[in-house]
Amino acid sequence: MNVRPLPFRLPPARDELLSSWIGRLAKANHCSVEELCGHLGLGQGRVPECANDLRAVNWARLCGAVQRSPAEIAAMCLSEATHHSLHIVSRYDFQHCWACVEKTPDLVLRHWRLAWSMTCETCGQALATKYPAKDVSGRLRARAVVGAEALKTAAAANDPRRLRRVDLTLHLIAVLKIGNLGALTSGNERARFMALAAVGLSVTRPLVGAAIILRGNDRAAQELRRVFPQHRRVIERVRALSRDLDQRLPGRTETEHPTGQKTHGTSRPSVSESALQAARQAISELGAGANREALLARADAIWKSTGGVRS
Image (cartoon, rainbow, N blue to C red):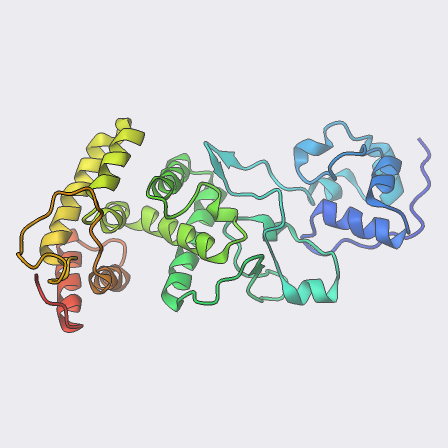
C-alpha cells in the first residue's frame, strides 16, 4: 500500500504516550483527532494507548503516514498491567508535570500514568495531581516515596507474592474506610500518598503496619474477619500484636475513661496521635528488619520522651 506521509510530522517526545503524540499530530496538521485516527486506520473510538489497542491496526498504512516503524509505535503504548484487582497503570491522566506541559502543550508521558511515578523523569520536577493537598506532611510524603519504590520493584519483577500483598493492603484500607481500591492512581494527592504509604509498610513490616491501623479498633477487626475469612489466622496474629502495642503504647487518654475501666460499647475508641507517631518513628529509625520487641521498646521510649503518660 502506497500511503502519503502526513504533511507535518512532529517527532515524539521521549517516553511520550501514543495518544498524546497523535493528538499533537492532529493539531499540527489542522484536523481533529477523530479525523486523523480515521485517516491512519485507527478507527473513530478511543485513541490507542495500550498495546492491545493496536491488534487490528493496518501497520503499512499507519507506519507509512507517520513515517515510524511498528516497534517505535508499539514502544509508545502502555502495558496491560493488572494483577488481581490491582490497577497500577492508569487509563486516564491523573497527574502531570507543569514544566513539561508548559513547554509542550498537550504533552502526556507514559510514566505519568504509572502508580509509582512521583517525579518527572524528563525534568526532575515533582508531578502534580488534579487535586493537590496543601497540608501533606513531610513524613507522609517520605513514606509515600518508600511505597512507590516498593511498588515499582514488585511490578518490574512481576512478583505475584508482593503484588498480591499490595492488593490485600488496598482492600484493607478500603474495609477500614481510609482509602479505596483505586487510590494508587487517584487524582486526590492525599488519598494517593496514604495508599502508597500503606503499600510501603505492607511490604516492609506488614504485621506491625496492620497492628498500628487496628490498634484499639475491635469493630474493624471484626469487619476484616468477615471480608477475609481465608486470612483469619493472619488477622489474629495482627490482633495479638495490636494488643501488645496497647500495653506498651496506650492509646486512650485519661479523660476518655476516667474510671480506668475498659468500655465494651460499639463506638470506636480514639487513638493517641503521640503513640502512633512514636510507633511510626520507631519503624523509621530501626528499619524493616528490626526485631518486634526492639521496635516496641524503641517506640515506648520515644513515646515517653515526648510526654506520653500511661493511663
